[in-house]
Length: 105
Length: 195
Image (tube, rainbow over all chains, first blue to last red; front, side, top):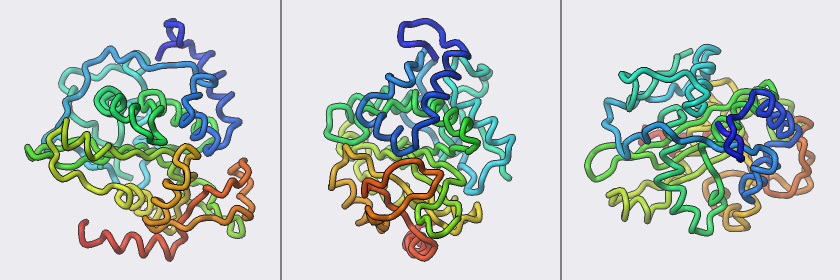
């Protein structure tokens, strides 16, 4: 992620923003986001440097999400894969374009 | 349905976001690339967990295209505060514009997604032992139209006079909707034939 000014987001800045947001209820955050005001509290944007996924995928390339709650390990993996490329561990080229399986609990 | 990763959010923002931004939609300002990590981090700070999901549908080519995005919160306080129970809270939910799917992505028959998105939350809630209980807050930007859509989908409107559970930390503005166990079971049963 980057700061709005273009500087890399520091851990401290992200923690501060998350702490600021966390005092709000989910409904309040939804309203801020829907009003286009999220940047006031969370001034980051994603740097979409990586290749965008294809528009469509073959059925065999999709890994159906588990309908069960994820295990701790599955949750951690999903959070990691949710982070923008610069802040998450980069996946090897073999994984590009394919879906990362989730752990079944 | 797949779990949402950063690439899904980036794709949605680049390929569908600009089209939605030109429409009168409550999600016109939503940037999923920012929402996805932000929601995880905020919920971790609150010692809860988010489950972001992507809904796919078959395009005319036979391949699958992203048509819906959602972020649920697990173990969220159930909105009927007279009962101390957990539920799944639908925090963000967005369906691709059907006309854009037809014109730009060669999908002649875009699916109706409202009930499908709710059904995902209900099934996850049932499987997590929360009895199918779900809740959501309808964004003010959606006006009365959005409330009507949700009630038409089968959700119950929480009376504006109802006291919200302590964990929700917001005044009740009359835009909270929910499904109790019975309503959830009815809604889930309606989609059972297509599972």
